[in-house]
Amino acid sequence: MVRAGNGVIGIVREVYSKWERRCPFTPDHVRRLRELGVRVLVQPCTKRIFTDNQFEAAGAELVDDLSPANTIFGVKQVPQDQLLPDRTYMFFSHVIKAQLENMPLLDEILAQRVRLIDYERINQGGDSSAPRCVAFGQYAGKAGMVNTFRGLGERLLSRGFSSPFLSIGSAYQHQDYDQAMAAIRRLGEKISADGTPAHFAPLIFVFTGNGNVSQGAQIVARELGDAFEMVELESLPELVAKGKSGEVDRRKIYGTVCDIDNMAVRNDGGPFDATEYLTHPERYSPIFHERVAPYASVIVNSCYWDARYPRLLTTEQQRELIADKRTRLLAVGDITCDVGGSIEFLATDTSIEKPYFHFDFDPSLSADTDSPNSAVKESVPQEDDTSVLMMGVDILPSEFPIEASAHFGDALLPYVPILAGDGDGAGTGAGMTDEEVQLREAELAGACITQDGKLQPHFEYILGMREAKERDLRTMEEQERDILFSAVEGTELSPRLRQQLEGSTVLNVQGHLFDSGLINQVLNLIEEHKGRFAVIECNVAPNTGPQKYTSSALLQITMDEGRHALEEVITAIETLASVIPQAEAEVAELPKYCEGQFGRTLMRE
Image (cartoon, rainbow, N blue to C red):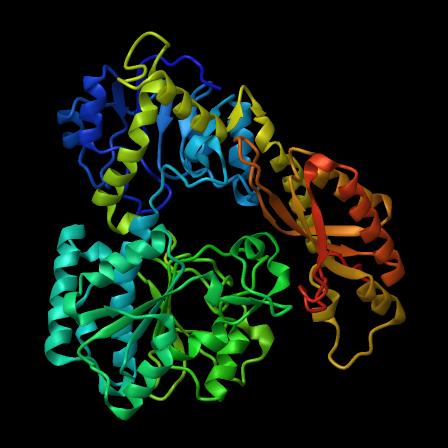
């Protein structure tokens, strides 16, 4: 994968968002690179958190033209018309799941013979199942927690209660991270002195997951000092009971961590197994809405989720909690920012300048109107409403651009001499042992998506996934909308459509889908049986390291001839999976996944 550099690197100006003030390297990093003999070109930028003068003083050359650089670094996607041919680029590309909005960028990368290395795929040892090496996650948690505190203050005020949380601004409104933490400490002192509104005591913050994002949020919460206390999840019912009797200390707020073993239970009643849950989530049912949600004042959502797993909290589950008067939920700080995801009523993402909306759970709203924005209230809620304040900013680390850039650059810096070096010249190895150099090279190889105008073998799956998504999009455009949604209410389904519905389902296919070629063969097999399919969700783990790990795909399938034909194709897929041993694949039907809504694969009559 490694090819000769020329000792020159470039840093692009960020144009993805007006709020994107981060950069992959700080002036201090530039200074250290110059000491290694690496020449650094920096495009001038007036919104970057570090000034052009600071970069110039560190030894960088301020130029618009980065063509002398062999390797060019950015944070977010580089505009396709600004790509230079035959260069190495490193940035978050958002193409590894064949995101259609970024396929034109991928096309241009291939046309320009760009070697694309994606930070998201730099994993320890080059093993995609291992922890990531270069990420902003902790600062997403930190900024998200500051914003959640501020949002809680606004929510309490909308309910008619002043609180100390109103003194906190959003993360970006503080000069830097240290100043933000000083404000958090003052908030803690205010809570310790004056307490929180008795009407809502105890205020309980539930942190989902315990990874880097959650840890970042917890670090900020602990800056409250004596005003913050971590408690065990099992103690929440007793704590809430004390609040109702007035025995709880309202000069504190409380936090607890909810990990995956308190989010779902095995369908057969057996013990929770984390590995099984992660690989076979269809064997589990959600319990967060029963065990945890009734006690939460604020949910700080920080855990990974995709469509294979049960949602943490659905719109209907929250409605039921409201109807049963079993909810205390005031706000959700959804740091994951998965719209319609694990917290289903995150109906839309939000922006740094406008970070909140209120989701209305008025039961008079039909299920169809819970689509993004339909239940978003722009006006201030009334005192007695049951709406929830939602925060879902998608570039939270950019609210702490100084510290986030420093943290990111520290992790990225060891790779630069390898990329910039020519084998014997500028900075190659930078004092690393041969073993360390080989390790870094393996990690870069695992993250290399394109080279010499081609997708690398472990990313060739993007082509098939893209084709399926584009076919799905064309089908949706042709059909306009699912016939179930367009049918006149009360109209009886025709026998033909009823038969199609009986022949529709979703399969979860899991294994080494792409390097074995299984996924393409499965899709071809469905077409050979004259069926239709759509890729609902795909989670990819490319095989590049010594440890074996799996990918998964949720496939919606419709067979016009009904259930009998569907069972035949399912059996054929299972047989196919069994005769490709290297795929180590399993096939599971999820018959209730789409709840009868198969608009992607039904045919209009």
